[in-house]
Length: 320
Ligand SMILES: [Zn+2]
Image 1 (spheres, rainbow, N blue to C red):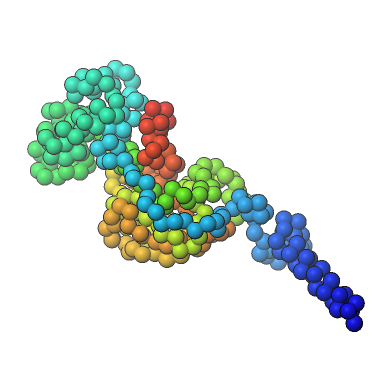
Image 2 (image 1 turned 60 degrees about the horizontal axis):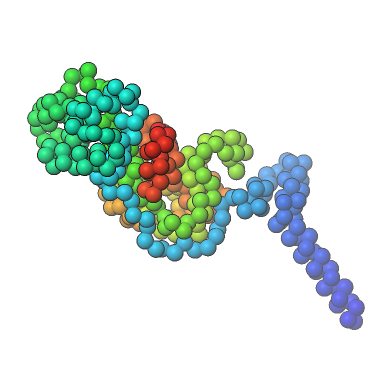
């Protein structure tokens, strides 16, 4: 009697081991893929890498602690102007600095200069325009634009020969907006896939990963990285439930694979506002947030614009 029971128990254990090996080990995954190929059916196998923890991780719950403080708008403008000046030929750079009465292109000095000029001219856009196009051109544009404060409105009043210098002012405002962005999740959230070229875990092709992935449990609060306007709040087969925010000056941010969306198209959101709950929607190997930063030239690595790394980035002169 006991022996018969023991035999049944052994049989049960063997079946359990086989089941676990079939469904939860890389050799099992290979065997299932092979069987699916041979029989011409679709395999429901996870990508092999995900068995080694390289896929999106479910991980520990992310405590909803304070988000890292972003750079102030003034400091970000100084950094943006400094980065733009660093890329100019020395003679052009010296011309801008001399005209503005500046002794160096340090982010701090430029930040203070833009601060003073913003107060005097009524807007940061006018101050940045004055830095690159000169006092007279900025004054002329401000008078003609009659209350119009965006760089586009001011630039429209200037002759075409100012186009290149207006572009420098526009790049400064774009970089400043990107430098002032906060983070969508607390610092403790783990990056499971960085920005850059990678073998796509599902499409199995080498392609640019246009954002960064954080492995977080479903339902984690996703915060707006700056104030902005909701341009998209939708659902698609690839990105899942996504939110696209427009922060002005050509900067937008994208948040994909959510479980639920908390904002609608046209909404104005505040910096730090919870805009979605993360999830595993769309083409995804596990619960994660895909966070993307878009500038006018396309997606860039958000880590390069992180508040505590910006100075190194600016000094390295490698920003887009
Ligand atoms: Zn991603």
